[in-house]
Length: 279
Image 1 (cartoon, rainbow, N blue to C red):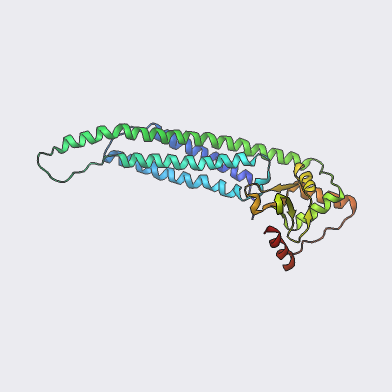
Image 2: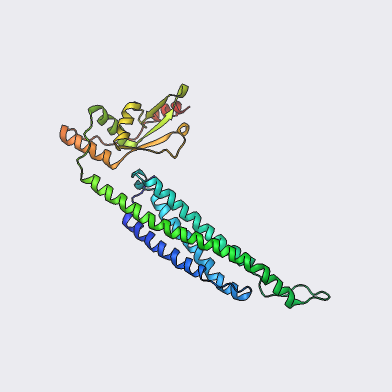
């Protein structure tokens, strides 16, 4: 199920997120490691902030991943980049947590003969410093990459908005009667592309309207329908009518004087037939 989202709001969110990644990157980069209790005091707020950024990075991914934006040309690259931002934020948080774990806290071991606590503490600190520096460098790198990706996403989604605005001002696609009937059937409740016997492929609507592959391809090529390629073909790929497809339908009806037919719920027989075809 798709939900409407405000792309301008998501763009602003990504701008703020880029700023947050930059600020945390600078704090991690400029951190002077001092093993012991002081390092614990320094690292704790950084770990908490990094975990907060993971949640903030998930918000636009969740919003856009289940929205009509997925039908926009170029959205795949944006969503992949958003997934990479979430991954990078997690890696940065993990790096900071590893630095925290590698930090030798000021403490005392079990009592034993000939133990020099000062020497033990100094040796632990000497071993920990390069390890902590390595983890912090990895975290800073991931934060820097996340900031860059957020700026890329702001540019990409803004471009998508401009393209969509330009397309909305263009004349709707003219469609043939056959294409109109196919779009009209799809607009009622979408359709499913699936394999049938001997590897043949069909497009079937919930009310058992069969749409030829050639008709589907002509609609798909013009951006009037959207095929969900994230699902394996053998499971059935969902097909929906895009905003351009809806405009083409409206234009055809206006030009031909056709009255729109309200969508009807699929009958039990149609559902049963569809299940049989999937087998």
